[in-house]
View 1 (cartoon, rainbow, N blue to C red):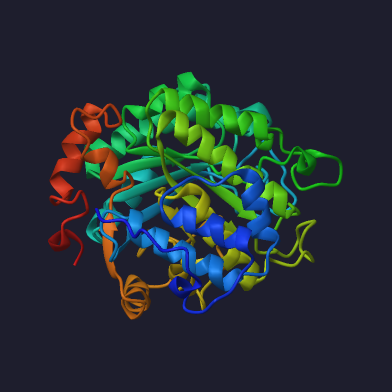
View 2 (cartoon, helix red, strand yellow):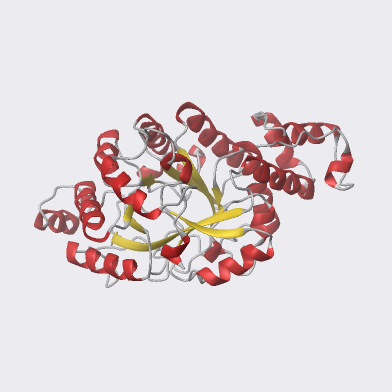
Length: 410
């Protein structure tokens, strides 16, 4: 693909002006060269937001295989169990066993939901669970025992196999931090796995901080999961939760942590940048969410730092302004469901796929459906990233570009 080789002139940015060091950093990033963490700190501190966003957009268009395509995954959201051993200060997803909203789904319920998703032309079954609820709740242990299992991951593995065999929907599991052995088990019948890094800030695990009562959110634990997934060659989705108390340097540090692990293994298929939204009834209900201008700048910096990694911003959490993130360098909208709600953020319904298509077109891009495994991992010859069970099904869905055939979703 042709890469723009810009002249060292301010004209490239349509008369936007900046300090010499910021200009130099941005020019090099457009040329596909890595920037240092110190340079990223400088960009974050600078007031050149428009310049940074312009640069990110140019990079996105340079590195994308198809610079005019923005993707999404048509999915169902399977809330397998919302019991969780962690207690994060911003979360309403977690329920205790005595709550009317507690979920512990039976296999028959999951398959029935997947069948509905199939009728609505979904291709992904997103399976989400709380973090190791069996370690905290006897009710979770009894539920698993009644199903013939001792751990949530064992049950997830069985359900993924059943969903794949009976419906053809491709499972993508997000069960939080996992061991290498657990991920190896799940790889057999999952197109990809996911876990939000959220942040690398140890400070946020301290007393009165959002992750103080969430042992699974310790950055060392999360980074170990990312490393193990890379060693296992599992296409992996991760990301940051922005606005929970992290500072600008911690945001940059977190992005560089993702960059470094991907540099070693090349398995990070997608980075989600999710803005924290305060929820009533939580300790952080009065905490302000991140402002749009700041969020756009972070998205642009993520593109500059991560270069060719797929970057997503959830449209349902930014219902009136999500199109603006296309200007800041994203190339994916993530999972959108015509069937199920977002169980993590139920107060934010997904926009319709037609609405997302319209916004995307107005920005000059074409919306295309993808599978929960990105084309670059599917199309690699003799790919070790795709299990035999998954490969059989992906071949039924994709076109020559590795995207979902138009006739299957329209």
